[in-house]
Structure formats: structure tokens, C-alpha cells
Amino acid sequence: MSQQEILTLAKEGDATAIAFLISQALGTKGIAVKATRQNTCLHLLLEAEPLPAQDACIRVIVKGLLRLEPAQIYSIKVYGRRTSQQLAGWTQIVELKQPLGSGGAREQRGGGAQEGGKIPSYQSPVTSYQSPVTSHQPPVNRHPLPKRTTGNPWLLVGSVSIVLIPLCGFVLRSQLQQPPATISSTSEKLLPLKPIPSTSASPAIRISQKAVAKPILKPIPKLVTTTQVTGKVTEVSNITSPSPKNAQFPAENITIKAVGDIIPGSNYPYNKLPKDEKILFKSVKPYLQGADILFGNFESTLTDYRYSSKGGGGGMLFAFRTPPSYVKLLKDAGFHILNVANNHSWDFHEQGFKDTIKNIDGAGMTAIGKKGQIVYKNVKGVNVAFIGFSNYGEVHNSLLELKAGEAIVKEAKKKADIVVISVHAGAEGTGALRVPNHNEFFFGENRGNMVLFSHTMIDAGADLILGHGPHVNRALELYKGKLIAYSLGNFMGYRSLSTAGELGESLILQVQMNPKGDFISGKIIPVQLNGQGIPAIDNNFRSVGLIRNLTKGDFPNTPLKIDEKGQILKK
Image (cartoon, rainbow, N blue to C red; front, top):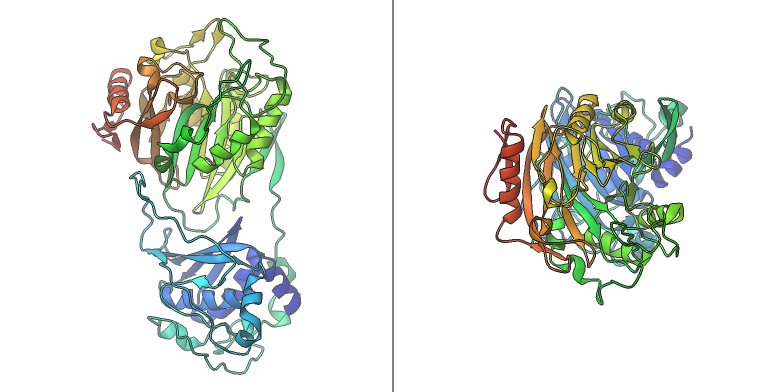
């Protein structure tokens, strides 16, 4: 493959081509480079013995990518790791003012920069740390990253200025031998470029046509694939193209926040929508931020379809229809995953179900709940799979069909490090606070045995169970090191869900797991719904006290400790 072909692929954002170019620059110090791209974030793993020098390596990568401008990359995350270690010795995030390859850099630079002129600098902090630690505290006063603008497109790398250098001369050896405290804003004199073999220690690097064989550049994996589980076609949806489960990128602990039932209002059979829909998430929005993944159970439909499968309602028949425009509220609140496997997903027939999924996915979130569906999301080097279950087996994965459930979990575990189960199950109302170890029935419907289902799925490979459906909070359990939340209660039910007594006590569940899915710690962020079903933070911690008591009563031997402020720790 020619030099131009490699450069073209790299400019298009091909992670394998970029890794090859950087490895040629760093290879003289024995540093191996691997790369993967997750949407607009480029992850680079640098491995060597001893640990690669952080400052020098970052300088090399930044200069090379500034010159290369790979398409639509907003951020770069670099991991430095000793070859003999599993976890990164250091990690550094480099944020971009605007995506590389967007054309803005070339427009701003003009001819002067290409001829060695100084590059305008932009000052911003760089996230850098020695060990992966995720904060547990609600980021009430969280400071956002600088907004992307069409102005200076230069990388934000500390209080330094960056100079472009020719791509084929990524770095001088002395840069690796003497890590700089800052990067000079004056041009550096480069040695003449010469073709070199892979074992060369030449101070300047050039990509030779003979240096790359075609097998090095692998095709980018497809975003949607299919597989077979127990004779049925199982749909596998990728939010981002996941790296293989056994990829060598160092994984970090991840944080998931989860909430229960969400109904932002309904216009069926008559209008019960708020005058100003922005009030719905206003009080709790700051507490929903700060997680790697935010999950919720969407218990309405997002459709304009006129005909309900439940007629005009009445008795215990409730049909919820939320305008499709409300999807923006959910996106703005920060949700990544919304479950639609519940007893209201078909309130407006198959058309309403399809519309709901289309509108959620179209807004940049992902709906889970279709029968046979596995959704993958790669965060911080960890592949996380999501699967939705309910007792309506004809349209969703059924919690009543344990063998089929085990099969789809095992299938997900082949690619995922962590498998998260969302399950709509259990009886409803204040009489359903306790978790029985037998099948529950509600108005004649078999709502399953949540204890048996949860334990069986964890035995098959699941790592986190998020229950919803009873409209009240239920106990927590730690089973084989994996957390089970038996019900997350109501989170929002504008003029649709009762908020009397325990029905109005809710939470934002925060869970931190290691890359293997083992529970590390968590937090109950208490929420109270007002008479209209709008959530707000509860300074009286009522749901904390409720869940503590339920956990002690239903699972007295579970190795969890919940303090009065909602912190959840292993005993």
C-alpha cells in the first residue's frame, strides 16, 4: 500500500492507519501503538517497557494529528501502559476546539502556518490522571467544556502553543529522551527525511511504501450485524462500533445512572401536557449529569398515531401518547439509553412502537426492548451490552422464558465486558413494595419471579439488573458481586401516575462498576414527585430510608451497606 493511500485513510479517520503513523514516530523507543475510534473520540494505547513518557508522547501525537487533521475527531484519549500491566499508568484527554478535518483548520491557518509561521494558541485545562477514578457526587455545579466554535481550531493542550510540522517528520528522538515542560511556539528544524526500515533508530520518520502490508489496514466493522440465538435471529445494534471484548485497551471503572418510569405527559384521549415542558426536568437535570451512561424506562409512546390499542381507556386501561417533539427534552436531560420493553409500548399498536424507537434513535439516544435485540455501547474502553425484558414475550424478550433469556445474555457476553438487563416486571402499587421469591400476578397477568429471573440472568453472565414496573421503590441485592435494583419506582408521571405515599418517592440510582461488571459502590440520590408527577431532589431522603428498610427486610444477608445519606457500599 502506498504512502498516499495510508495518508488518505488516516485523513478519513481510519484508526488503524493513524495508529500505524504514530507507531512509526514512537517505534524507535520501543513503544507499540494501538487505536480505536468511537464516534468522534480517538483512543490511543501506548505500550512499552518502561512506561512511556507522558509529556513527550502527548507532544508527538498532538503535533502529528494537527498536521494530519483526521476527519471528524473531537477528542483524543491517550493511555500509557507498561507492557506487563493491565491498567493504564497514565491517561490524558485532549479536547478539540472543533473537529479535525472539518475544514476550519485549513481556512484559519492559511498559507503562513504551512510555511512555518506561528500557530495561534488556545489555553484550556487538560484532563490528566494517574489512575481511573470516577466521581460519585452529583455534579450540581459542573463546569462544561468550552463550546465548539468556528474560531481557532487548534488543539487545547494546557497553556502551550503548538507548531505544525510535516507529517512524515513526526518527532526527533530527543523529544522522547527529554520530555518538555512546555511546547515551544518556535519552529523546529527537522532532519532530512529518509526511508527507514522498521528497526531503524533514525531521528526522523518517513512512511515507506514497503513499510506497510495490506493486512495491517482492516475494514471498519459494520455498525449493525445479526447473529443466531436458539434458532432465532437476534438483532445486534451498536451505538458505537465496539472494539473486540478482548481488546488490549486499558479499561476503567464506569458509572451508570438509572431512573424508573418516565411519562412526560400525554395528549390522549385529551390533552394533559404541561404549558411549559421545560419544567419537567429542570430540578433534577444537574443530578442526571456526570455518568458514563444515563438510563431510563420510557413508559409512554412518542407518536402522532391516532388509534390506540386500548380504545378510549377506562378502568385499568391507560394509554399514553407523548408528542414526538418531547424527545428533545429527554436528549437534553442527558439520557443515552431508554427502555421501551414495558406494558405501554404498544398503546398505539405497532405503528406507535416503531415511531417511538425511530424518534428516540433519531435524537441520538438508543431505544432498547425489541425482541432479540442487544445494544452495545463502548465507554472508556469497556464494552457494555443492554438488553430489555418484559412479560410481553410476543414483542419483547420475555422474563418468563428463562432459557431464551440465558441464551441472549450469553450471546451478549461474547462481545461485552458488562451486560446490563432492563426488566419490566412485578405487581404494581403500594402493596407491591416487597420482593417475593415467586411469580407475581397483577390483574391476571403473570409478571414473573424477579428474584429467580435476576439470579438466573446473573448466572448466565449479566452484571447489573435494573427493574421497573411496580411504580414503587424496591430493595437492592448484591448477588455474586452484581447489583440488582428490583424496582426504581416512578421518576416522572406528569398528570398520569399517582404520587400518593410511596408512589411519589423515587431516586436516581448511581452505580460504579469495574471493567468486569463487579459492583464497587453506589448512591441513592433521593427524588420526590409533586402532585403533578414532576420530580425534584428530596432533602428529607425519604426514598433512602425506604430502600434501606426494604433491603434489610427482604435480603438481610446481602453484603450491602446503605447509609442515611444514600451511599451504597459493600460490607
